[in-house]
Amino acid sequence: MLGFGAQRDMVHRFYFETRVSQNLRPTAGTKTPSFTIFRMSKARAKKIKLILFDVDGVLTDGTIWLFPTPQGVEQTSKTSQIAAAAGHAGYGISSSTMIEAKGFHAHDGTAISLAHLAGLKTGLITKRISETVALRARDLKITHVFQGQADKTQALREIMGIEKLKDEEVAFLGDDVIDLPVMRLCGLAMAVANARDEVKEESHFITKHRGGEGAARDAVEFILKAQNKLEEAINLYIASRPAVQNAVPTK
Image (cartoon, rainbow, N blue to C red; front, side):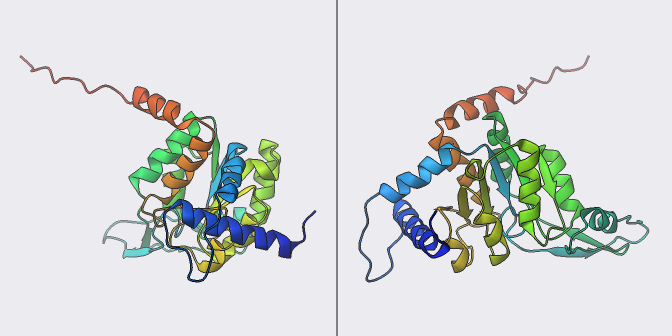
């Protein structure tokens, strides 16, 4: 088995090759490599059965909006109950006077649907605790939702146990250093376009779009293309949309 240093060197080459695949300018002084390493990333993608995502900075642009509760409206927060159930050192807003809001991109929502139609499982692992995230996850029918996870590797192992999956069958899309431990345990480590440099350097694939702006769609499509499932998933997605009915004038 390769030591961590050797693994890191290989990951650095993955990162460089991925940048070349996206027509990004190589770092000054480096040689243009072959596409062998990029094909290795695609080979990893072919094995994926579960795609996991961070939330803030990945499914959102990282902005957290805090609004005062409208006067006369009682806000009942479940954040504290979620935190207690999680049993981890996560954090979130638990207030009867403030509302936390996040923005999610529609393209990423479609990506989750495409993944499900292609037979892949999905999940969220995030340190923060937010009712907004729980609502979005229910809306998209995301299989596994783990909030309040200071140590994301614990959630990963639990999910893998539930699904009976191996490391090489799991992909994770992250953006910040807190995601590195879980990314190192996954067969396919992915970073959003505006991830921290340390995260990009240990990624097998880097999305074209920034977090909250379609990055999850890039990640899902990369995997489905590698598995030759994207076209079929798109056709199923279109077929599953309800037909637009012509309005019938009332008498």
